[in-house]
Image (cartoon, rainbow over all chains, first blue to last red; front, side):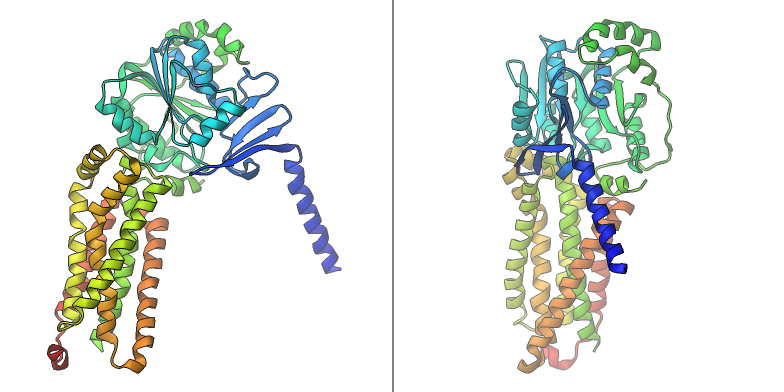
Length: 296
Length: 202
C-alpha cells in the first residue's frame, strides 16, 4: 500500500517535471571557459540560457518567425534610454547576451559607434549563429571583463554618450559590477550629458542595496519596473515628463517595428524611491551580492 | 601541556587564516582583473606554491632550537605581512595591471606580490608544530595526523565562515584586520609561555 503510494507520487513528480519542459527543445549547447551556453526553443521563441532547462532565468530571447519583435521586457525598457538622448554618437554595452540591444541600436542609429564588451567568446559565437547578431564596421565586440574594460578605457580618451549595463552570469550580475566604485568608474566614462541604462532585478534582498548604491553615485534616476528594474539616468538634470513625451514620439514608428509601443514605456519613468534608504551601500570592500540575492 | 595545546591552536588558526585570506584575495583582485576562473587559478597557484615552499622552510627551521615561542613569532610575521594589503592593495593592483595587461599573468603577478610572503610563513607553521609535538618515533604518525586534522579543519572553518557569513557582515579590510589581530594575540600568548629546560637544550 505504502509502496504503491510512493510509486504514484514519484510517477506524478516525473510527469510534472517532464510536462514543464515538454515543449522546450534543446537546439544547441556549447561549453566555454565560463559556463555552458545553451539555446532552447519553445514554439517560435528561441532563448539563450546559462542553466539547464533555463532553470534560472533566460539571458535573451528571439521570435524565430519575427526576429525583429523584441520578446522580453527588459530590452524595451533599456531602449527607453533613447528618450533621454535620442541620438548618442557612441554607445558602450557591457554584456552581449543574444545581442538584441546592439542589433536594434545598429538599425536605429546607423552612424553610431557601438562597442560591446563580452567576456565569453562562446556567447558571441552563439549570438551570431542563433540570434542574428553581427559585428561590423561600427559595431565592435571586445572580449574582456566589463570592469577591466572600463578601467582600461578610462586611461584613454574615448567617452560614451550612452552606456548600457547588461552583464549577467547564470545567477545575477557579477559582484564586482555592482559596487559604488564600479559605478563611479562608469560615470567617469560617460561623455558630458552621457546617459546610463542598467538592467537589474526588481525583487530580492539585493534591490534595496543596489538602489542606494545607484542613488549614491547618480543621485537621481528613473526607476523603470516590470519583471526587471531598469535604471536610466544621465549626467546633468533629468528631462521632465514633457520632454520625455516629445522624444518618445520620435520613436513611435521605429519601435512599432520591434513589436511595442514607445508610449507604453512612458508611465514607467518614475523617480519614486521605493526602497529603504538606510540599506548598506555595495562597495568593493562590501559586495556579498549573491548572498543578499538569496534573501527575499 | 600548555605548549602542546598552543601548538595545535596555532596550527588550526593558521589554517583558518590562510583560507580566509585566500578567499578575500579573490575579492581584492576582482575589481582589477575580474573574477574569472583564471583569476582564481592564479590565486590558488600562488597559495599552493607559497605553502609548499613554506613547508620546506618550516621543516628546516625546526632543526634549530625549536620552541613554541618561535612558532608564535612565525604566526605573527605571517599576520604582519598581510598588513600592506590593507594600505596598498588597490594602487599595487592598478600598477600591476598596467605593467602586465594580460589578465592571466597580471593576476598571477598580483597574487604573487600580495600573498606569497604571508602564505609562505603560514606554510612554515605545520612542520614546525610537528617538531614540537612529536616525542618519539612510535607516536610521530599519530601526532602528525592530529596536526593535519587540526590545521585542515581550521582551513575548512575559515573557508566556510568567510564565504558564508563574514563577507555579509564586514568589509574585506575589517575581516583582514580581525584575522591579523587574532594572529598577533595568539602569537603573543605563545611568547609568554615559559619554555622548559629540555626545549632550550633542543
